[in-house]
Image 1 (cartoon, rainbow, N blue to C red):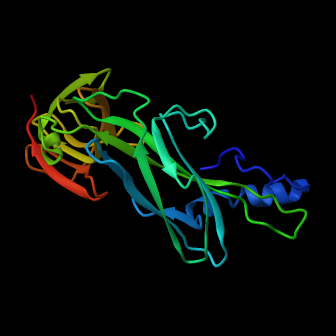
Image 2 (cartoon, one colour):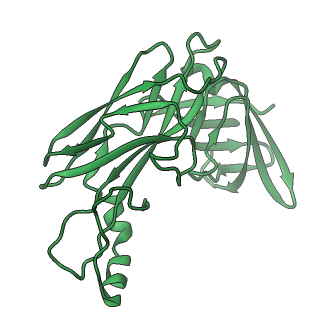
Length: 254
């Protein structure tokens, strides 16, 4: 993901229009192969912890300068204007080639968070553009952004049982089959796959990064697409667990 230059002292060089289009064609490749990475796909912050740690690595053969912060869900928030109640230490760090850096996170308490359900935030790691001797080369910052879940202590349900609290319902609207998922748990649930079979319909849900997460006590509606692969009657679905892996479940329609 591209983001505005937040590092001071990195001026945009002059470049020609031919270079711009050449680099634009490579942006997807460069972002997918960013040198800086986080050692997790999500971070859980238990409310009872004074601080937690996650690790940022540098897979490049040269050192990388990074900046880290937490936002409340708006990807345009910067370290200067975010109101997320978390402190990251160090906020700026230089990571040597093929080395890692531990980032400590603590809850500041400046914002009261619900104690009966999870709260969602986002961790940002911004990599500064690499220095170059080519005056025509466009330099960009690359940012990695992952979910941060603040988890209150003593919730009424274990996280591994949250998916069992989803209520499923299927309806037809304007010739399309729609699956409704009601999350009756205090946890955020991210779905990775859903297959369904009824007497009238066999298929799967069309999931995207934008529609696959259900907030606590929330509801989502998903478009179903036909699929010939037979399944047992009911619903088979998978969720992303605390460790970034998948957990499989079966359910019945309400």
